[in-house]
Image (cartoon, rainbow, N blue to C red):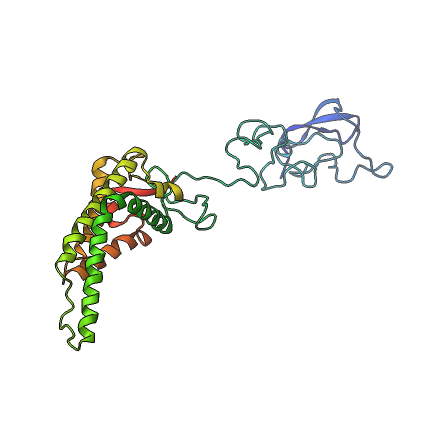
Length: 321
């Protein structure tokens, strides 16, 4: 295949260039535009150089001759820094296409967007990884409220309930002490009468408690419930946490609204778990309500929102602080 028209080395004079019109050599000549080509043996043309009257082969480069237009577009294999045929050109350092150090597009060490060595990442999406403290292990998946606050584990709620129960018992003792004293006195007298009857050979045929027991027990229980309600209502509506909850680092809030819960939510929570406990004392059906009360306290263990039944009624969550 013939080479395209252009200036090439004159096959008759190595110091000149001659114009090739695409099919034959013309008489147009001009001085060479570069160093002389490598010469072969004395009196012979350079290797690979076309003879006079013969066209150049497409894609060949001769000595110091100017490359053809197609040769300009095709990189030669083996040249440093030039891409091989079929491979994309690699951007050079400092040229467009490669972000330079300190320029936009490449986060710098210590700047936002690149975590620091040894520091955890804090994703803000619901249900993603959060660092845990206390119970659990680092990286454990922790359930959160819709705005991302981690929810309390079950054992923290249990410990908080035990602490609050002790505090409420001490606070209510001045109000309930007399009733409990009378209650235990009636129980003691009943046990003495039962043992005396058994010693005399006339054991009692029934083990029903005397009615005086309920006379003292019911007021004591009602007073204790009232003290417990005032205790929770006072602390939860002001800070979201009773002293027991503060001791273990948890608090109560509405699931969708941060901050202390309103009084209506506190009353709903208290009514559910206290009502189940009271209904457990009813004969015959008490066993069913005792089971429901137990399920209520265990529900956060498998609930994806970590809510007990009384939390679902009041739309609240117990969260980590």
